Image 1 (cartoon, rainbow, N blue to C red):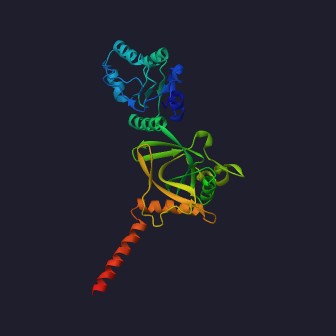
Image 2: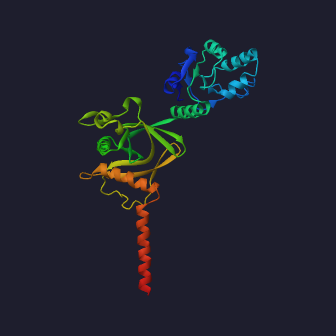
Length: 312
């Protein structure tokens, strides 16, 4: 099961640590956020202890309606279930009770500089990304003209060399050699590089290339939605290759189908130009223009017109 340490949540979201330092190495496994209401009223039957707890002005005001004795009893009940962390939004004055019990139970008490709604959205998006199931793909992910394009193929086919040429033309690297893919939602696939491989390309005969140092900060970005898969393969004389673009091939990651184009590699073919053209052509399809369909429609219309003229 994927998990993230509380300390990483703190660092990545610029949270202030108020108490419970001993719990910073604990793991978070749930991407949903708990905003306690009935729990602060003493009803714990449906409390999910795996969730991070967020307390905003409303939750804090509701809790303050009770005496300090009752508050302590109910907070102890919550903390006794060992939630990963309790986060307060910017406008909430954190009670010394939370500080004391956070230290006692080892539950990190954290403070954000964001208001409750913005903080809730940010935390949910962050945890959803970090905790999502990932699939490792051997390939190169690029942003080609705004279209996330995943280049796959057997080792040695020229994926990284093609990527280097495309970066030189102004396109953007996301990941080389290994791409970590996760599904943000059905239909939305996100790709990113493992931390250690960020901004690097491996080119046979040259070695490791740092694209940021070589081409500038605009040559690299951390994540990109994948909208096209391009597979490079060696040319096979007797294999059928689509010449019009009417065969709609797809590949599937998790629950999401992605358009796929197979490009045969042959000496003399400029693979970078072909990949770039495939991405631009797919981008036009997303915008509603399909060249192959338009051509066949025009041919059909022309043939019908010729038949009508022949009958006359």
